[in-house]
Image (cartoon, rainbow, N blue to C red):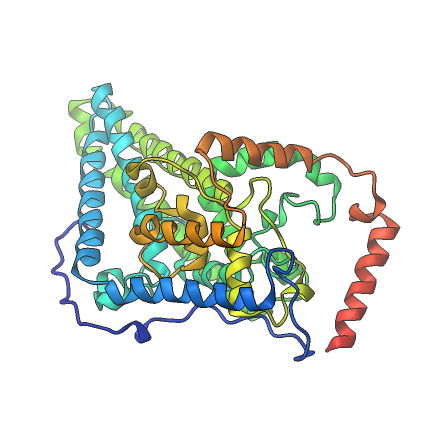
Length: 420
């Protein structure tokens, strides 16, 4: 499990070998122009804005090399060292300082693996290295959610259709009302307690989201595809439970005659606590990057036929950053630079602090909003959003079960069907 693997040599690749950003949403009326961003700039300025961000992306891609490769390999070594030390520490629950340190180190290892390594590797940020150990197409992360389904829902759906109502399933995760344009249902009264519960079991929420049970029940996901997703999820769940809650506790059984009968249970509990710590951290980073106040959402019809510049602008307006130290950024997987990540998802995340300077320059040039703040500020903003939008709105068109709201949604469906 922890054996040293010889890294594959780096073969030089040009920037043209990297995947382009997701293509725009194409509408039935090819002549219709998207209105996104017109309250900020003209179509000509949007075009220029897109070219300028393309140039930023190209410059970084052309500069990728040994320094970036050394960085990710160094992070992997540190993560593995933390995991080994953490696992060893859990074997000594009768020395509580060592045991607590073991939990902390294992939690750190899981955070690094999920955030700075797994998430970024699966975005293809290091595919140019031709190293099978960090190949985005084959990498499987330390979480109950299968990489295959997460990559489809996150890399393709979420990053292509970011914050487009009816397309981006990450807007509230079909669980919360996090935007005023979402219809309100009675279950949304529990926005805050549900968010707290999800925070504790976040990896399980990610897994459930990837299975897409809601899409299957709504008739939008074929039965065969749903069954395949469920099978992958159950297989991954089995592997994760076996590793954390059976294998490592069982390794302490030979120590029981010399220590105490409860040592394997303590190891099991330590693994559970480390997983919960990772869940809490990942939840806060993700929610603070997507759901603070002033993060914008968009209607599907407005996003149709958007230009590259409008796609970039939608990513910028639909994301939020978290300020902090260099160590803080590493522990977030540099997803504290969520704006830059959504603009350039395939660029190594370690480059986002550098790229942020160019993005801020363009934001000032065009008078745009750059949503950023400390973790406490963004977390409070998210909590306020959840609390405010949990309240039953007075407008019947905002209530999902009202006759007015149902009639409005029916009219929209008929209009969309007519366009097809």
